Length: 180
Length: 173
Image (cartoon, rainbow over all chains, first blue to last red; front, side, top):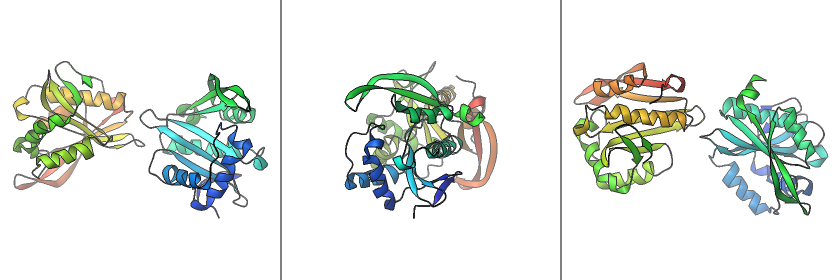
């Protein structure tokens, strides 16, 4: 049983991240199809995931993150985070992932909508941005559907699958989200 | 130097300033209107320096003319989500009546709105404290309410006035 619902969509809901979810989160973070697009190279063992839980999820910091669960059966499918926020500037970085077997159902788009509502309407963020690999077309489509603008290219910024790759930076302003 | 005005500047508070700060904040003319109703010894000032001034929350700055410290301004109880914070200020009584407080608090307001992305500043003034109240009114603060018999000053219960200034009302320095 995941933690309580924090924000409810049509097909998915955001839940608080609980200790019992760490095994699921660990599975996601180590899965090659998830960690590669996130450019997360290092293996994450149980202890590291627990540290992340203690220091990043359960602290009083400004960042926030949620477990994404399918609404029908509360099956966890992924996670969505805005882990880094520069509160004085009001800008935060968005990250998300959904397990490969649950991709293609629009879960990421809906979960991201829910976290953007929270970020802009309840936390007074002024801007949310995301960094996406040039090869990760699915993720770019999610951001473009949500009216993120592509703001620039980070040339050959990362090393993925044996090659240097560009990343794109996407950004969305509060007024663009709240007016739409 | 942290912020520069015509006649005064705001700069960071250093350990060497604590003697000045201690002298001024124990002065009855300063501590009574601020309702700082406890003696503050050097050790307590040191603690205040470590835990409040150097904590990274809010902002506390020394008001100077040339190199000479005149007083202090502070912004605290800051809430990044609502975009609100409270301000307080005091000057060495020897420096009163020159408009230094208005200029220094104006610099603090400019910093709060232009750099810290704040939406509203709050301040509280006891009744009567005409000097302090005038500083706020000159800067465009609105009086928002009166808290009856909220403080105890010089042997009697006194009201405090609550003032507020919104970012879009701020006209700049």
